[in-house]
Length: 446
Image: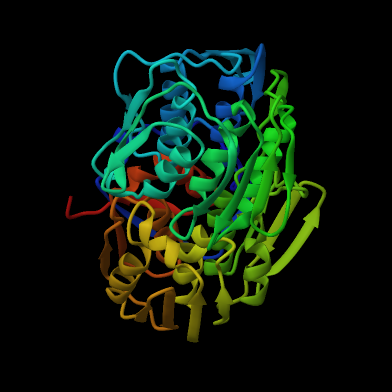
């Protein structure tokens, strides 16, 4: 019998999960496990490796729906991505000359794939069209297409939304201001192709909600040989004549996924250790444990192992989460358990993610009897009295599903719809919960 808190196998296929999953609270969790690889780093590295000269050994990439979308997209543009020893991917790059795909590129539901590949398509000989599934087609892309046009590319969209049509032929370079209030990915996408412009690119991201994600892009680019200089809080210069070179690149842990594991400790008063939480990570969500400490958690580091132990009940807090907007789901779920009033600010950008996360959180947490006031840039949550039974909709959003799991691990009678949506970034999430001692089952009504 495996020890509690030990991962015992791969993720179950989405088809193996019930359509309506009920979590059975079992007291404080106890777990030590590895978080999955970073989706953000995997997709950035795939973009760089696809454009690089030579081959790249991509060690420890994330295997998820988003990464699969990116892998297929760069493959359609001429980068060969194959399996290598130890679960690595071997990527044969295009030396800055991706081909025009035979048909439209399907980004599925992946925002990073849509935006990064649209930028890559400007380097093809005759262009490409990039689209995706209906949920993705509601996510904005207009600031990116405008920025690409400003740098000399032919680019058009559907009134600011996908699909995106790129003419190909390359980029001239120059200076560009990228409105980034709705997504930092617009700026990241431009930076990723900037080494192949005819002249240097100087980019300023206007109203950038999370500069850390753009600097993460710059860090991956530098690892592949690009010349990227940061020139202020939200400005970068990419030199011409420094294209990507293939090599050996290791993908670090996913701080966003680890955050959902740490939230289980805080929700249940238990202890979770993520054994592969690299201390030097540039991922903005690596800052979430410090927020959890403000909610009463104890945080300890031992090398790459990061341990969070939760309090009997989390404390309410007032927090600006602008640097890590994805974590409004995690913190709002914990605030529902915290006796008192919490204010979560600076996350208006979360309205344009896989769902309108602020509206969805307000609506779903209210089903638990939690007082939630929706603000333009955040939420006010009056918690401490969350109670079931309740059936929580995930709105097809992986982060809502994982955040609601924390509440359900504490509050009896909570069922979560469409739990398989976590496959977007963390296919093994429910398997890891089981390893931590959190039981779940098909809801009796289904």
